Amino acid sequence: MSAADTIVAIATPPGRGGIGIVRVSGHKAMAIARAIGVPERAPRIATLCELVDADGARIDHGLVLRFEAPHSFTGEDVLELHAHGSPVVLANLVARCIGLGARAARAGEFSERAYRNGKLDLTQAEAIADLIAAGSQAQARAALRSLEGGFSRQITALLDALIRLRMYIEAAIDFPEEEVDFLADTRLTAELDRLRQAIGQLLTQARHGVRLRDGLHAVIIGPPNAGKSSLLNALAGSERAIVTALPGTTRDVLRETLQLDGVELTLVDTAGLRVSADSIEAEGMRRARAELISADLVLLVIDPHTPPHILDALRAECAPQCARIIIGNKCDLQPNAAPLVLHDAEQGLRVSALSGEGLDALRSLLRDHAAGTEPGSGSFSARARHVEALARVAAHLAAADIALRSTRAGELAADDLRHAQQALAEITGDFSSDDLLGEIFGKFCIGK
Image (cartoon, rainbow, N blue to C red; front, side, top):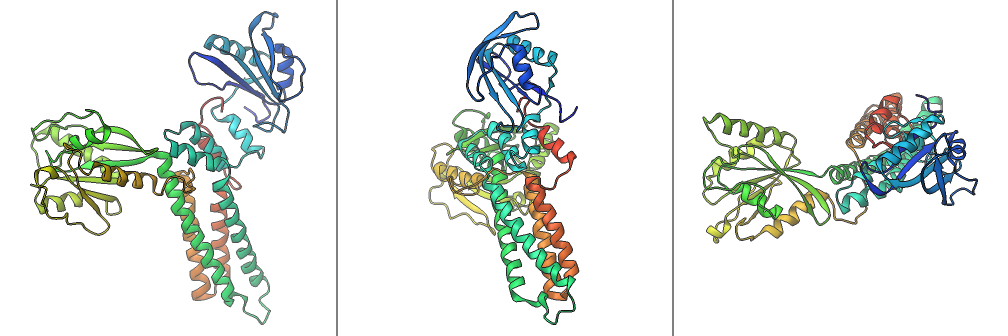
């Protein structure tokens, strides 16, 4: 496969529909258009015509759009065939294009060509896939902000500041005979401080963006019969989990995706954690502990009869860095109970899964954790690789700061800034490997 090939794919979802679109991109696109029966028209004007096979027999009639390079999504000549949405018709059109010299496109190849031809940077290309996959209003808005360049502009501004700082330090290294110690200039360290602060803020935003894109993974744990399954049912608004008075009813992991004010989260109900000789219940508890490893948030559910040492044992099951909400369920049974005892940064509230008391407050807390920020505040879509790259940038800048302040080792500081620049450039694709591109675009849908 070559980047010079002309590619073709169905650009609409599988199945039947009123309209289906076949997309062609590459230097043979206009020749294919003529051979398939498309009359010469000005670009970007929809034309109704008959689409014919090699014998001149009609495959279908539909609308055709032509986009001449470089004024197209991919930056190449592009042809779009809007036909009836029959899988047979669309397959015939694809086969006809392949017979005329195109080849079937790989997953994400149209977007990859747009990136390689400078129509998009890498964060914008990824945002296309995120927008297509958006499952909530918040995810769609965040992906659209990234597609419009909100994330990219921040990266570009930080790259410019980093390059200026690096140039200053390397110039000071290149002219050591100067009497002035440029590395001791307080403006240099002040600029580095501003850059580190900006990177820290962007890293926080990117983590929020990952949470918006992937949804919050919230795991419900607690002792048997504390009301975990009842709480899941109450939040889901349906009888998703079996509820009985018998301890150990929940034996497996149950997942429910919720939409809270346009923000998505996955709520996971798990088996009650206790000592048990039952092998099936023990397997359920093993699965519950496995869910805790990847949890973004733990809902630790207790009832008025849960002793403090059980609550502490449940806290010990959670990863130290994982956010926790202590939920005192069944508050309708003990309306005058003492306030919940919370540790460190824990949040807590009393609810009744039966009566609904406190559930609105719990939904608000969950929404805040899922969004990480208030809706409409400018969050953008981000991925784990962006967070990892920004974390490396922050680490290199911290090392450069130590080199400048402690030892005045300009060479070490310059090297750390070079690595920081490289990590930052990976995000937008200014510096990237073919392996990385293959991994990213290979997850796109065919035809995009």
